[in-house]
Image 1 (cartoon, rainbow, N blue to C red):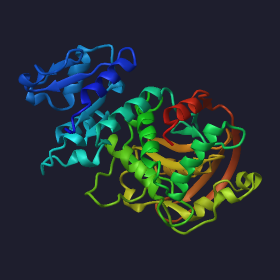
Image 2 (image 1 turned 30 degrees about the horizontal axis):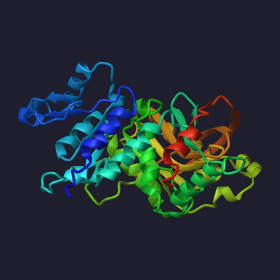
Image 3 (image 1 turned 180 degrees about the horizontal axis):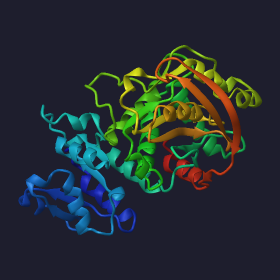
Image 4 (image 1 turned 90 degrees about the vertical axis):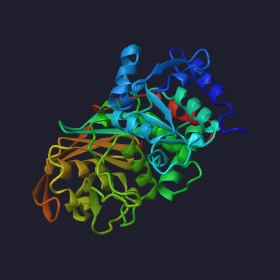
Length: 376
């Protein structure tokens, strides 16, 4: 059986699954375009245009689409460069990968499509994901927090409870059973109109440190996939983990074991005692846009800690992403920080207020459940 068996049917299904979907076959070789099946669009690309300008040229011809509508399916490094320079979602067609030494980038970037069934699975999930993000709050002039899912397991449907428990098992316990499905949901969601414009501006990507000194491998993997998708810094050599932006210098207690009143009254105090900004970033963060990804948030303490430190470091914008949000409450703290946020500093709490001006997307729960129903 050829690895290409079923590719035409998969693309035809995508084309017919939603009004307006187009399949555009791009090649610099006109002879290859003669073999394109009926119903697919063709675009002849000059060889010298297989760079950033290619997608712009295609969008000019099909002017009812924007950059956010583009999904690229390819198996060569030129496809990698095209995707990363335009910050569009890449499906790495590994079934067509030839193994050439100069075609290695595509192996570590994008959503891997090893067999045609993976392609059909992606299309099925993708067509069900529309406005996925659950929660958004503009915390300050600099900082915005997004939460991808409603993480509650009480007073919810059995399907949502099952999905949330599986997601928590993936993030908290490192269970890899459903990791790839949740990652695909996360990646597709990041390119949705709700977040894609913010995400395209991000220079540096990091994760919020766990209460201990060990790295949350699942969260790190989520961050690295999306960092590569959006050409985030720092771009280090293969097999080397980038240095964390926020680093835990000594372990602290787990906040979820405390009562709600204690957590609110403590604020960020215990976090500041054990977290600093990594000195490796001392000359890099001023004027930059930074994203910090956390697994879950309840009252917003992680975001508030990151906000206080990174705003003191002079970032232009902070996008804080929690993969799940428990409840709707958010407490904003005002701290005065004196000293070096990359080393030793002191902090003094000035005020706290409860924020209720969040934007809530009530359709996100159905999107989350429907898109992964029967798979998780």
